[in-house]
Length: 148
Image (cartoon, rainbow, N blue to C red; front, side, top):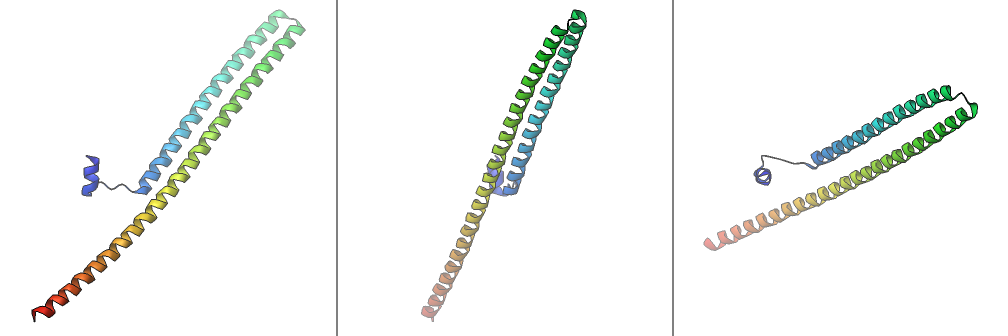
């Protein structure tokens, strides 16, 4: 049905609209990924704070300096692991953004090529119509000569 409407001229889809739609989709995807990353980071922080509170409470209860040092070491080790995971996720996000940007540039280049081809086609059609008109005029002139 949309094809019928597009052919009848009631719906016009321009390449600028398609590019705009692609850019909006790209922005929505990036926003969603950033929001998900922020939520994960917030959850990780809450977990670290909870673990730190538990470790502090255990350290107060145990009273042993060596145990406290061991707990602090474990907390730092887990924190470093979480930081490493966060950096890996940020790297994946940036790689995804780069791929999306490259795809967008490729689509824009393809749209430019299609536009140039359509422009050339239109020029050729106009030239063809001009030739057809001149041929029709020549035939009309020839017809007029024979009828006299």
